[in-house]
Length: 337
Image 1 (spheres, rainbow, N blue to C red):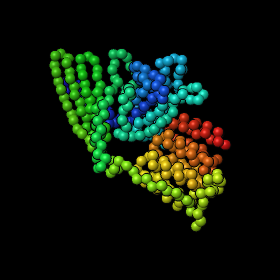
Image 2: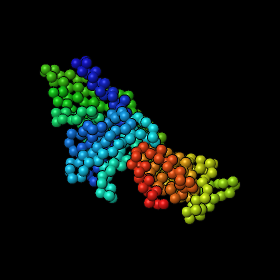
Image 3: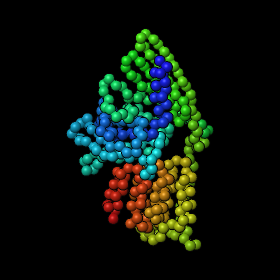
């Protein structure tokens, strides 16, 4: 029994060493099976699947729809951020029907696992190199309790995940994400013996925001070049003649980074872009201030008409994690030449 308990403790501890998660959902609610490296991950067709404990930066992904008429999607998925290998990140992508009538996998976001919340309709599975069978019940039912004190700085997040297996044994594993503790309850009815063992702990994480709102101040930023002020008319008419000076650009980056919420940061970033002429390298630096792939792609498209050296726009590709984002930006550029 001690060996059995130790095994479950090690299994629970694996949550803290888990590398990355992948979430794939169908935008229009189509049910599908998700295959990674040729192995089916979800037993039943679902509309939203999360695969946890992914340790490699790339996987061969295949989506097989329940409705065979919809076809099959084959793509390589990259669990990387800005071209770099990362840990403890959750990558979210969607299965989307394009205007050409074909399905594509589109990246949506990348975030720290500790900052994510499971969806009510989401099926969560551990990555496996063997296909699930009806006798295996490795899907995880997730319940989340979150208490947030918006007037202070303490946020308590606790995630409890429950795995049920057959052969007369029930096991409950509770994990405090971002902390160092495990809650494990083992009920073993084999041979008429009942045993309960528990290891518990809690975790407290903090938020740097002391209030639930961010005070947003509208700003107009003009670049200073050799003592002169570049007017807004230079960019508003599409005449991008000279990129921002280093000092003006650094002030703009500081202004963007100072905002607490991504929505506000995005507003300021677009103001900078709309009222100035930028180099492709400066556009890339602004993109890297954001974690979400979708936001980076949005900024790259928004800045294209305000970029001095568009011939160097290929340099922005390094700021993307997914090939689909590179393809999307390439299509946008071709349509705006």
